[in-house]
Image 1 (cartoon, rainbow, N blue to C red):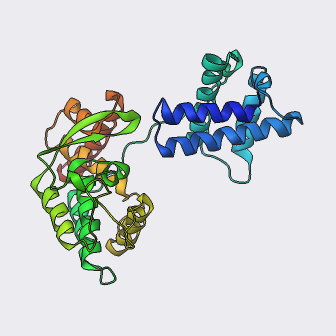
Image 2 (image 1 turned 60 degrees about the horizontal axis):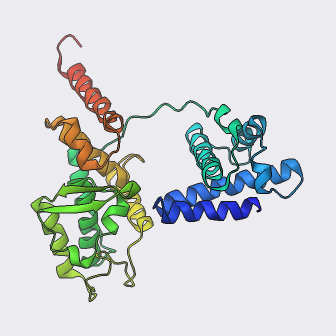
Length: 304
């Protein structure tokens, strides 16, 4: 069996058994193909499955160094993600294809210090949601659609992919939505009246006949709305509002969590609402809240 045939089996396993997201599949496939390409060039031969079992820790480190020093050098975080993909690949080769490689465990990735989330303020979040309606270049139904999507991100803490996965049959939105997120994890998310009203306003303006099983949010020509459109929309409006580059669609999800924490919500509840597998991921939001408290203290205290 060739290495590329083994790679195809691994990607099929990720897609159908692990139910990995399209974004994960794309990233893992890209990293593994670069890895195999490097090995072919380094060894000067076509890589077989048996060869992968013999790859040394030094060769893996050389591959990481190649990624770090290439024409488009990767950041420590991207290097860590690439190494994670290769570990997953070799783990599959060990479990399913009887081609273990103990050298993989000897390679350590770069240290990556998890950064604190960068939310927007409550006023900035409101401004981002209201801004599409003020854009003279958009039709009314497009503005209503963009407002509904951004309201879902901030009002329910959804990822872009989760908001765009909603079907027409999901609306009018119920009191709580059942959302399937990363790793096929399902969670229940309460729906605020403001979120329901924003989606209803979009449906009232939508010029398309939406089939119950079809996507709720549509692009200008009637196809499914893409994540790239949402990102481009936010990039445009943050320029008009004078917001920093960190004001992304995902920042609205960060803001959802940070503002709930600031209002007294407990971490466990926020973890469930966001669908985090680990509480340590949710605990990053306490850093943001503590930073806000220290900032307010330094501005208000007479001896600061």
